[in-house]
Image 1 (spheres, rainbow, N blue to C red):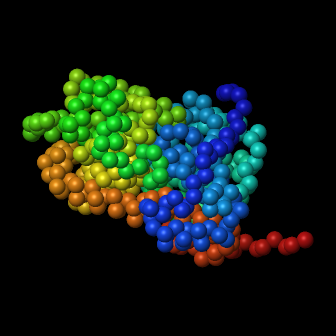
Image 2: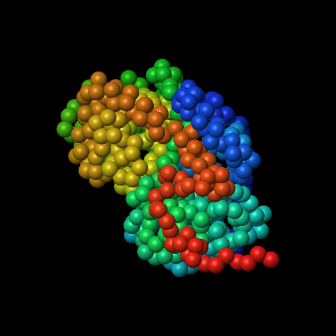
Image 3: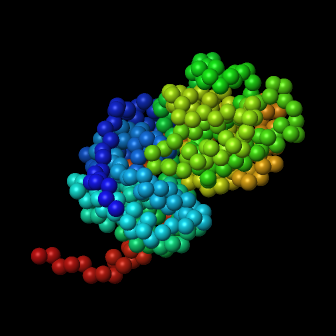
Length: 454
């Protein structure tokens, strides 16, 4: 299958932000500590490789991480692979099956569509860096291409604890060639990995447009064109759901719960349920999922779908600020950055007891936890958010502080700096977020004799 030459593409940061700009959010003490941590690795290289510059949480994080790391003196770079439609269709299957979805996949898709596409990148110049982080399954097999020179780690943003055996067995020989693997939670580590494991939690950038903490007045100004376009009364309460249209995001249960809510109780004024989701270049299934949801909603006048809106980041932040509650009940979730984004706007979240959501939604403190398919429980928590405004406001205040302490971008950069220090020999002790005390690969290295020097 020939689709022409493929080349790694490099991202050029639009601006160079500095760690001092984060002082209002994290305090001077944490800013100074980060500068001190970075000093020994000034000039060292840190490269990242993923599958898209636009769409999804990984791209959003890297867009902020690269300029911040550069401002600290690290030679940070970001590359993406190229892929045709069939390639992304197969890697979407990887995403689903590695998280336990039963979905057929053919050998031709694995060995031709997937491997041939990555093999076509062999004409790209080699990436030489002290630390190279390859994100998720799409570019995972690049480790065998000879293009990556340095300490190469695989960053897995999904839950691989119960993967489809066929896909996992196909990938595991590639994954075990990495110097280490990074997971969001210890529970996400797949079976058979023989390399060091680390835990790094995703974070949001408080300086990003959608994470600016809007006033209610400003949020309404931003959303006025959409309110007019969709005939929405801005004074009615809003429940929001913002994510890709994806089988794991479980938007169908949110929609069912909203309908159940109004069967149990009549509200005056009636609440809206607004779905906001943008398509991503590496997710060909999104359109199909959206069509299914729209069919489920039918002609319900209180349910709206906003898709690929203009001025997206301001719209997202403003909608989160105005929403009475945010609903995110994924059946599988690596972390769910959108949860932290909503909490940062002071909006409590109804979240599922799945993946990294449980780290963000502290039940009864920053929102409410439910089982993802429990439509009745989701509807009950929707009612609680609508019926108890004082409690909802208190949850929102606590939510903001929880994010400030745990999920802002400088913390993410701090952990990668620690890895960079470790893999360049600045620090000899394992990072404190190392998950396994030793690995088969490290034991084997100790047993093998050291080659004689010429």
